[in-house]
Length: 258
Ligand code: COA
Image (tube, rainbow, N blue to C red; front, side, top):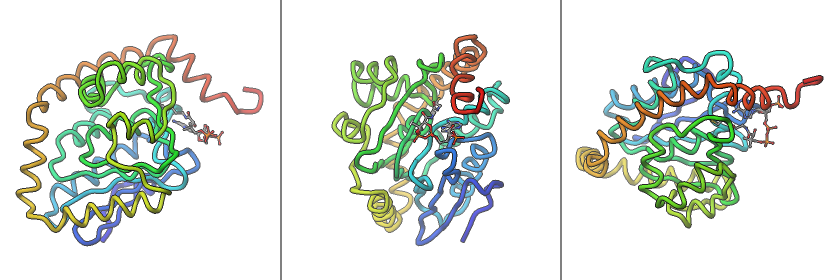
């Protein structure tokens, strides 16, 4: 069974109680456009509605998981408020009640990393690189990461990743407690995630869902409020000359004559 996401760049496949959602824009390292955020939200909405779907696994196509927000989109159609597809997706993500598992098959940047903070189990390909380069781009953290990351890995480490914005390895992410385990390669990473999904799908649904709810309960309101504050700062920073210059520099870096 497939779910209509409205874009061929978000593919879905459902089997044995698991909905596999694949970010499929490999020539752009799976950078996320407005239509793709809407497609991801549609997939989560269908997974919520359909009782046959017990678990969602998210992965990427090709050699990357996601290079984050599409930089051309940041320049041409930046998010402007709650109704923007990226913020709609973040709301759907933080409110999603069924287990969500990430199979990070390759490089993950920006929201490609912060969305992992909303997953229940995270598996990453050994040797993959991750990065939170918000400050480098003149931007600030999003998706609740300014709250969730220091809570998860401790302030000094979160400050290192979010303030310096340097790439870090899957191995360091494991050591610092961001992720559950490494897969030897992309295929085995997905296999690992799907095996956990099958196991979760076979457990009593209400017990699983309520356990997730209880694990998240204490931080639900704080995450909602943090995302709202981050989003306001993010929108404002996107309009700054520093962000415009950094985004333009990336957008034009390899264009002939650019
Ligand atoms: N938005 C738009 N296009 C992107 C993109 C993004 N976030 N990330 C990669 N691309 C494009 C590149 O411009 C390139 O296009 P080209 O073939 O026309 O030159 C193509 O995808 C392949 O990327 P490339 O940079 O050549 O691959 P790489 O393996 O050398 O590096 C990344 C991969 C992800 C490390 C690098 O592309 C990168 O840093 N991307 C930007 C990530 C980012 O800052 N995201 C926003 C965070 S808020």
